[in-house]
Length: 176
Image (cartoon, rainbow, N blue to C red):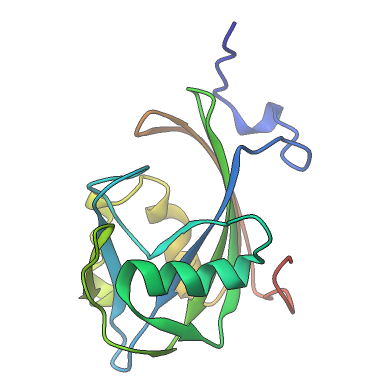
């Protein structure tokens, strides 16, 4: 029987057996615009997000971050800073743990791929209404320069529970 989870407080997040681990990479160009994508397929298809995807076997989160950016938007990010740890449980049984990175150094020009349509977005015009519901809670904190830990429960596309903590200090390195 499927268990319906509606409250973050009743979950042992540290030992939860997440189905997948993934990365997101927020890139900012000079002038302040943030690179976002419109996702074409997979989880979140049709939503706006940052480039990213699942970590492959044998990859570190940072290696996955670079690979996913190269595959999705043809950019190679450098000097990645680990800025958030996000955990998601979906009531259909899927779950994912995400490592979020930020950088303002990268090479290449963003190009569309079969996975994503990239676009530059002014910070004051981030289209939260086209993003996952949790983004409007944690992304502004990350953009303020705070390290964010978020735990979210979703029923399909609807967030039913959230827990967010933000710290002024970033960890010295990301998990390996």
